[in-house]
Image 1: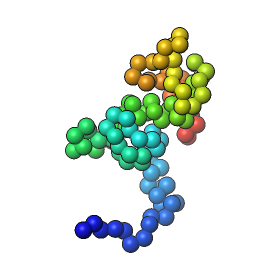
Image 2 (image 1 turned 90 degrees about the vertical axis):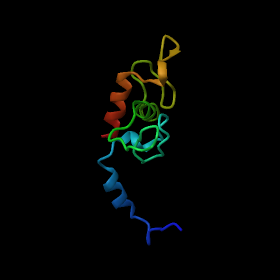
Image 3 (image 1 turned 60 degrees about the vertical axis):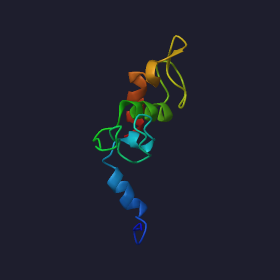
Image 4 (image 1 turned 135 degrees about the vertical axis):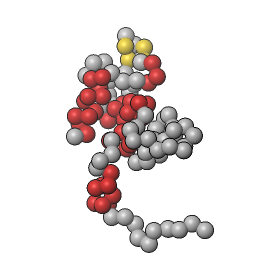
Length: 103
């Protein structure tokens, strides 16, 4: 038997509780499989991490910001001389741009 909340949480309260979380939590984590707005965990799922995995940060930056270095639009991976960056990483400038737009 599963217990359910009596009423859904109001959106303004939900936003207040998420305000302290890193904005990268708005996307799913490709490393540990954590869902949107849920914290990253170890691969075994036993420990909850305080910071998101680097892959989740890369995914968030890729989805939210354009890259000033290689001039790609959101959702397009960064590249160096036509070759995608290793591990789907993003340029530091794109990550900085994503943080600036989130603030």
